[in-house]
Length: 190
Figure 1 (cartoon, rainbow, N blue to C red):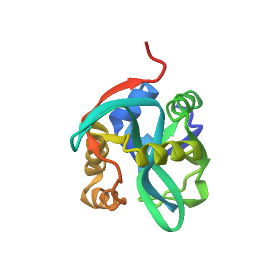
Figure 2 (tube, rainbow, N blue to C red; figure 1 turned 90 degrees about the vertical axis):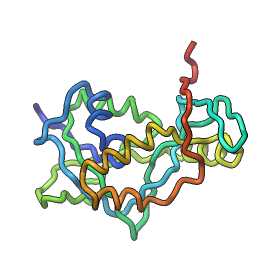
Figure 3 (cartoon, rainbow, N blue to C red; figure 1 turned 90 degrees about the horizontal axis):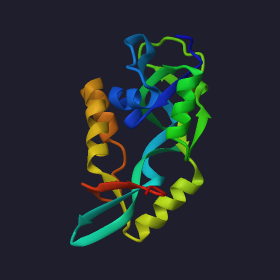
Figure 4 (cartoon, rainbow, N blue to C red; figure 1 turned 45 degrees about the horizontal axis):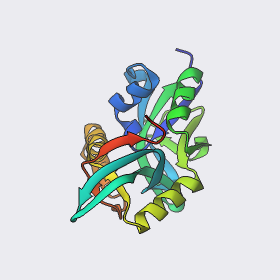
């Protein structure tokens, strides 16, 4: 495979299953490595542009609530663990579509592989300001939640990397919206 870039995943893209679903192939061991991104902190701050959910929480019924996922914030004193995955230009386009309300950002100068190997070019996805504003607005209206299945997928993916990586992931500031079992729908879907 001709490598065009490495993508740093810090949430669901740490999961080999989630990555494979997006790029259409299983990621081989030579195409993935554990890494750390300096200068960023992981947060529950991304409000989906396309997904909505229905759920019940604390006696309230939420219909077409905002689905919240992980994002990053710039922070001089933080770092974030995850994985880097080598992708082709076509796979990068598929990831760009999936992460279309995130800004693809070059983080080559602030990434470290656990094995110390040199990395040529690494990018990650940082929420656009509109995604963070969407999250904050829905949170304040008590109309935002995190899918239980997403919560479990991400925790399992970090657990598969090892207890120390799961501990680092679990040190992410707690979300200020509930983690709920929800029924998903797409905006604009029939």
